[in-house]
Length: 299
Image (cartoon, rainbow, N blue to C red; front, side):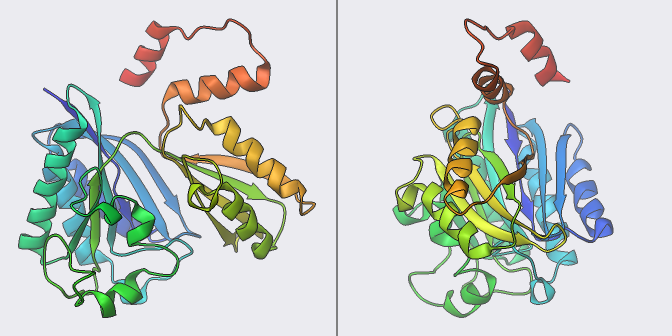
């Protein structure tokens, strides 16, 4: 029996009651294990991580999307993070006993069901994309093209969804796909200068000539009075956490800025943290204790 992780992103990070109801809907499926829940008030977004067998993971994701569509009205939503829908991005990730092809199948199964039963338009991304340009999430939804823009553009041929109607209701549209492990990593700077933050993020981004496996945006955190460099590390083995951190530090020095702190959103593979520890502690010949690592993952 294959094990699959699903990490849906929901467009609500403030109302704990709404978030709790979405989590309850997901975990109401017998056999689903909740791994992590991250609520971000500045982004007005929650990231839920759960795992289950390939037979039940689609049902759990569907229940979460259904609950979100009933509880979240995007016409009233504001936040720093780009968003397309109440249930914004829903990726499937192979953990054990399954491969990425199976996750692609699950993504399309969920996409069809969301479209048919909830009347929500669905765009497919990552390995599940039907169109080459939709493989990269930022080509679909970004700071300049999100809920407000898709409402007016979805009727065009270019923005026709893979599944569902060519119209957008208050639940917006969902972006469903399949991918490998991804690390969501943020670095906060001791500054309120967002323009400098945007330049740092641009220097990091792969599409702008930065690190190959990094996607980055800059946000202003109102409650912290800081600028955040928010990153997705799409291949942590080729672009490790410590390299992204050091790149932010290097670029920040150009503007006389200092790093206040960094954070990981959701879960991260243990070996990514071990590699960072080896880098900063200058460890030589250190080997991961595989038995210990396995026990930690199984908790």
